[in-house]
Length: 93
Image (cartoon, rainbow, N blue to C red):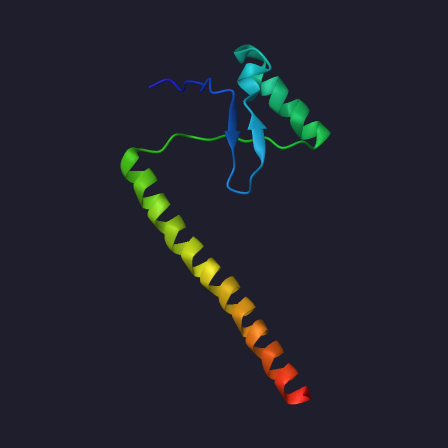
């Protein structure tokens, strides 16, 4: 099966970076030259492959769990700081 290039003009990464699809900037024939040029310039290159619906569901479930854990840690830390600050104010009074 022959590989095909996705024509979507952009992608958003999980860290919030917006990427322009290089296929929209250069011809398909010039793709490898464009990647080499990006490497020389030190710019980012993103090459992705689509995932199946089942794989996407699995990935999203893992991300959901990871996000919930991260939020619990951050919010828990914030709450502990507030409680500690209140206790300090009470004992200082």
